[in-house]
Amino acid sequence: MKPLTDTEYIHLLIAEGEHQRQDFKFEISDARKIAKTLSAFANTDGGRLLIGVKDNGKIAGVRSDEEQYMIEAAAQMYCQPEVNYTMQTFQAEGRSVLVVQIEESLQKPVYAKDETGKPLAYLRIKDENILATPVHLRVWQQSGSPRGELITYTEREQLLLDLLEENDSLSLNRYCRLARLSRRAAEHLLAKFIRFDIVEPVFEGHKFHFRLK
Image 1: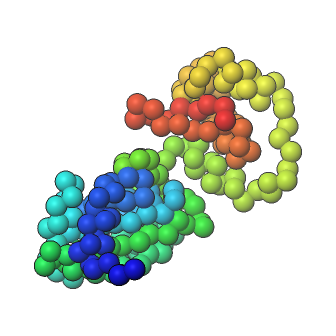
Image 2: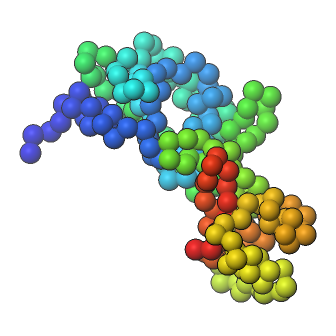
Image 3: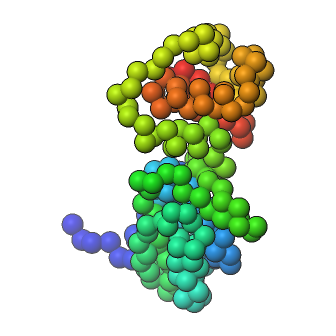
C-alpha cells in the first residue's frame, strides 16, 4: 500500500474533527493556556494537538518556531508534573502543520498553572477541557492505595448506594444535602466508590453527576 503524503495524512486527521483525543489550534499565543489542554489530555487518555489548523478544519499553517517553544514551556514550566510529548512538522497545502502527541500521564493529577500561578487539574471530556472536580483529585490521590483492600460498609456507604439506586444520578451538592455530609466527607466517599468501580462520574449539562455503574 502506498504511504500517505503529508497532505493526505493531515487531511485524514482533520476529517476526524475535534474529539476527546484531538484538538485543533490556529495558533499558540499563550503557553499557560495551552498547558490546560496538555493537562486535560495527560489526565485522561492522552491526545493529539494539530497546530496551524482552524476550528473549522481549514489549514492556516504555523508561521514560526515560536509555537514549538510555547509547547515546550507549557509542558515543562506550566505543567506539574512535566508532560511527556512528541512533536512533528508536516507540510500540507504548502503550509506547516505541527502535530503534538501527548501521552497519558502515569502520575495523575497533572496540574496546569493559571495566570496567578495557581495549579489546576483538567480533564478532556468530548472536545472540551473541563476542570477536574475535588472528587477526581481524591480518586487520583487514593490510586496509590492497595486495590486489594476491602470496602467497608457502614451506614454512610449504604446510604450512598440507596440514594444512587433511587436517583438516576446525583450531583455532589445534592448528595451532601440528602446525606447531611460535609463536602470533604462526601468527596472522600464518592472517590472510594469510583476507585472500586462501583460509581462513575458523568458529565451532564456542564456539571459532573455520579451514578451506579
